Amino acid sequence: MRKILFIIFILAGTLTTNAQGPQRKWYAGTLYHTSGEIFDGLISWTPPRKGEYEDGDQVLYRADEKSEVFPIPYYKINSFVMGNDSIVVSHNVLFKNSPFMTVVLDNPTKLYTNKIMKNGFPLMINTGGFTGNVGMGVGVGTSVGGGVKTTYYYGISPDKVTKLEKKQFIEVMSTILADKPDVVAKIKDKTFRYGDMDDLINYYKTGQMPKKSYDY
Image (cartoon, rainbow, N blue to C red; front, side):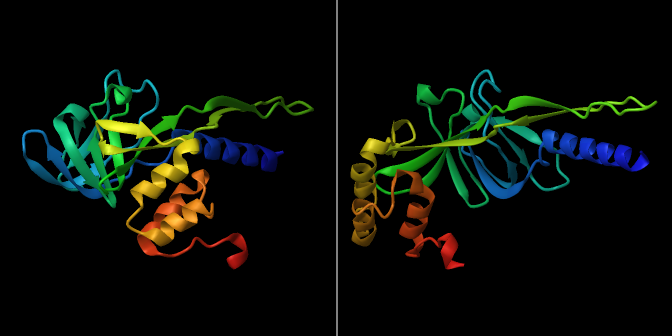
């Protein structure tokens, strides 16, 4: 009996921890303020959930690990660099609630991603009770089906973009990546398809084909 109770409490603690999500991560970066000032330090940003902010989005900034944390709203930011990501602000009304666009390719026709956190479905796990003189149940709340939704856009600036659709993939990506004919050839022969964007971009940047499971 004690062993069963111990397992239940361990399970409850694990699920509660997972439901709370990981600790906020900080990355070395630079924030370019609309005032013209440039702030180097630590930056934290995660894609917002739908409806999380009434208007726009924000990033958290601190000069170092011991400094005060300042929330900076999107309308005071021109752009920011966070780790390896370069992120700009779109003033397109389509992105009113998620105005941060990650620059994937800074080519004449640029490629961006817009990310938003998907709301998971609430899930309650009930361990039920036991037979005999002990009747005990533990209800643990968590969620499933979350994650980040990533959508690709292309255009000359973050304010003037078009969503990359599957039916336009070959034409659009062949134009964006036209400076590397070998990459374009693999788009046209369907080595890379609409669902292979990460692998395609990596091949464009490095010249290395993605490893398949049977390559290991």
